[in-house]
Image (tube, one colour):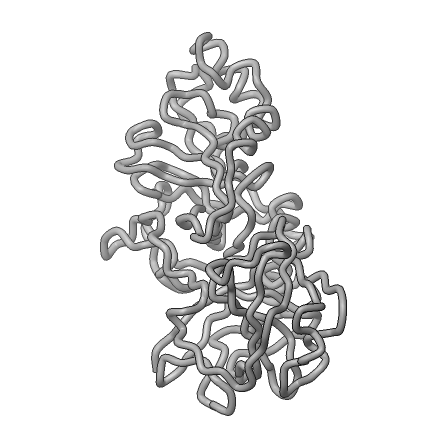
Length: 360
């Protein structure tokens, strides 16, 4: 059995006007053609569906298409092994467009006996309203035609060599700075719009001791360079280092963040740079997708009452930014808030049909 991963939305994540295109659990709604519009809700997050299948096609009536891990979608929870089928599909097009080149196919996913979500042939832009053009009953789609998650990832040091972050699984050994090889306790991921507060920060080759470019979320803590005069062993959110040569915001329409968690807070080697593992503090937990938050809560029912000591003394982003301004007065980040810089960069983002590379 091969394993396939692709991105999906729950139906509750869609804003729908006109006849309900998802009212049926078996056939498309013809009255929706040319009348119904759909749009991604502003607070929606993509879900990552991982499935096993023996033929490489997602289709109707195939009992061999099964989830590899628990999933919460559209307010429902499903266990690993749940069968998933594609019942019907729609061709959609941005409202106002008459160009068939803009067409996107969405595939309506059935879990058990009820439709709960959609996958698509291209990423849907949350700023665009789409009109349903036509439908098809019982389509067959190669997994490779769906928006998939096999993007080139950050290299994580392991005892067996460098591994792409998206290939790691719970239980795999990862090299840590303080405690040698340690097994991964939990892995999560989230796909989101890569602008504003979710905009990634790119660390150019060598900027933080990394062997090649590194993409991180703004709040991801890294070991602070000694040149900033804050001591040799402190960590700070990477957004506080924007302005350091080679460290800058990197806006993109979409980005996938992957979280690695151990039984304690650790420093790991990501593309050669020393960065933190996932620390389940209140703000970090809020940033998780509902699916990941639920899976972590199942593993650690007392999560909110546990103490999680930090692996190093932690600086706030503002402290790091002020230190950067003192150490390098001409640095572009000194004196500017991360919000100001992120807003400036967000103005440069244009819609894209491709998902950006994975980040941590």
